[in-house]
Amino acid sequence: MPELHHGEGEAEQRVLRGLRLAVELSIVILGVEIVGAYFSRSLALTVDAVHNIPDLFAFTLSWAAVRAASKGPTARFTFGTHRVETFAGIANAALVLAAGVAFAYLASSSLLAGAPLGGTVDPYWILAAAIPTLVLRAVNLSFLRRIPGRVRDLNLTSVIVHLASDLAITGALLFAGVVLLTEPAAWWADPIAALGIAGILVFESLPLFREGWDILTERTPRHLSLEKITQRALAIDEVRKIHDVHVWAVCSALICMTAHVEVPNMTLRESMGVVARLRERMEQEFGIFHSTFEVECAS
View 1 (tube, rainbow, N blue to C red):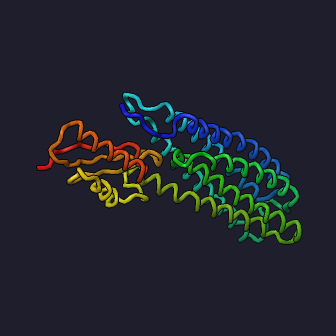
View 2: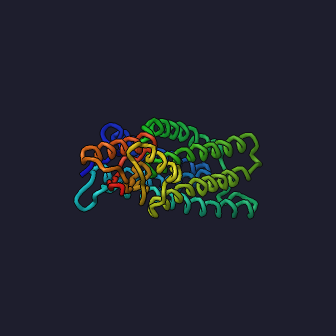
């Protein structure tokens, strides 16, 4: 069975450590924001605190998915369980989208009511929760972004997008806290921040749904051109024709390819040399690490 290049070894361990760190820091942030939300009566902080619950579930699911995929191929799952990571990414997106829609409704209700839903908001508690949350999220994002790009699949990308948008969410919390601190009568700052947070959550979920859909429908990856792949294969001297070309992704970090290749009359050893050059070109130029070519003798 061929070896699948999917960031084994140290890179895979860095992914696992990064996701575990995301889980651990999410627990700490959840505790900090629950306390802050209770004492501040802030809708925006409550939104982010509640948002941390699906975050925690999503990061745990992502960590479990990478653990499952790292076991490699088996007789029943010949590509391994890499698709589990795609399902984890889609689950993350679904949780974020649902949270965004629910929070947008609450924020809009507050603005329409003309008053904060939970009473007067205390900006000191907002800032007391938002500042350490900003630091913890920045540390986590910095660690994950240093993971090699070649092992960043949809699952890990969804976590990075999650954390990047969480930094923007924390910025909205800081905005609400500073505005209310300088102008206590500006009650609208809190629901406006909550509405902004909801918008960020909805926005971040959409590209993850699209990429997950592309993988599950085995669409040619959007960053690749089938025409260019064919042209580069034909640029090898011995390749006369190439047809029945299929390119798809098992997950966003594992792209596969199959094709029929016509070559002149040659020995088996010579034809295997052509296949080796094709595989090397596909890997180096297009990031296709798993390619299979059926050699045919040109008539």
